[in-house]
Length: 454
Image (tube, rainbow, N blue to C red):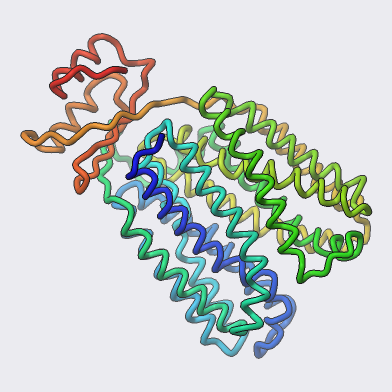
């Protein structure tokens, strides 16, 4: 069970993600039409205005995350959210398409997705990590669907510039949510290394690279599908574009009933690799159904349903697995590389979706997406089961200096990391139970003044 601190932090950080994603995604379903009202607008520049956010996100995730492994994470998140809000304001006040492009690029400069996930990993215990990451993953999926439903409706009320102002407001609200999260001080055994070596260490880890490929493929397929499927829902299912949000939301809700049990099974029974590969299989199945049945309304919806179930499982498992596999001293860096893969996937998926719409062969289009998913599955077979650590919660000692106390803890075999929350007077201690022996238990008992059950 999560404690109150974990529940509050998970809610706040998931809300930050959701508010950012809402601000981003509400623009997507309306800008191809509404963007034509801007001076100097062309189809290519309208596409750039939509896509430049993802491009700057992909470029700047790694620098932000490298810094976040050295310094406090919360000020970096505030900086990123201020850039996000500023970018929305610049776009809202622009009368030309170039101003919108600049605003979207500035908003994308607030590339703090990985930093937010790393902070969530800091303030949650290992055994609750998957639940917390699942909540964050679900917030992304829900915000995506809600944005596609709200975007057209809000545009009719406040116009496209008003929609950008809504983005700014959401960025500022996200900053307020951050005050619900405790400040942390991280301590671990590894010595600090240069930025280049830190990034090099992360990029050399094959399992991490497979996870980066996975998030790239997942968001490539998702974005390409959302560009590719609307015309088929109109043509074959006789569902007008204005009603598509009413299709996506129920499918998302149904998918959650399948996703949560899968996530619990993955963590509780340590079946993460099996559930992960099964979820990729579910994505392949959903896409394959649409190869053969896209002309039938109900088979098309069945394929979408299978895809959404598998997508939500993957969206929850990926950050949790990443937090387990990443080196403790480079957790944000690994998440930064992963987030760059996510945004590059979305960027490439947008381009691919447009090309598929130009093919004029729906069967071939779904076959191409299925082929990409099959390649992803083959790459993922090389994944090893992640390392499972546990977390203990200790009260901070009154008599000792915190730095001295954490140093003594880290000297004990099996203690991997200590995250201190001074305002709450508690510390989360990350433990590898397989390395804890009698001598380590004795040292812990001596240091804490009481026997610890591990």
